[in-house]
Image (cartoon, rainbow, N blue to C red; front, side):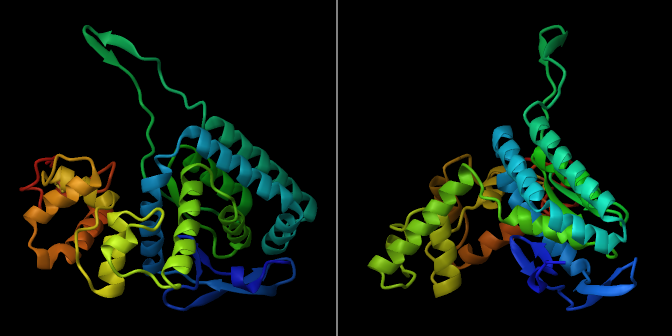
Length: 329
Ligand code: SF4
């Protein structure tokens, strides 16, 4: 057993954490009946946090190309394969199965991950056709959102891979809940996935973060600038981030942060027809009193996360559906 104690935690939104309520539960080796470790005992608060994080991740993951998702899943498979011995030992101890069986489970899981990596680029759909005169019909495959997954105790690694692989390949994000009896290889999977170096869009973000940090050290004496003009000189920082930083860190309100939720809500609610974030912000500033600009951002973000979800807005329970020009009810 080589998992470190710091890794016997939940992995939510890129962070390792204990359960919100601070409770833990024992993990037992059923072959020896000896305790292996304690793991967090999650509650609805943890599920809510995980779903919120997965919804945020969906905003970018669902926009990745099949090639990017495929590349990431191949890297994930490589990472699992390079930790095969460790995973097999953990699985054997946690489930109480022979090492030879656990080793096969890892090998099979690697093969399955590579299958889903390939499948990401060959998603099936019926060919477009004219099934009705003057109309062209086609099936377009789209990710559906956050997938809640529950893995059983008996094949914890394989079952986790069978659930994660196709959901991620199709552009969905996932909240995986392993069995509380056998969660250890799922925790290890999270650790391996977290170490995978993302491609494309994510690499650009990394470069921007490094550049911003460098400029803060070299130009601003290691401090975060506290004006809009200075913040906008940092690589990767546009008005959205600058507004968030100014409002939260310095109590200054110079605008309305237009993130992906605010943009979508502003368009659906008919507040703007613009697509450019700066123009959307100007339209919103004209509509909303200045003393409400800061909370307004967060009201739209929360509404976008919980009700006016990107692909499946819950118009039937939306409190402003009678005002909304995009309402489906
Ligand atoms: S009515 Fe529907 S589209 Fe309009 S804001 Fe509410 S959830 Fe979104």
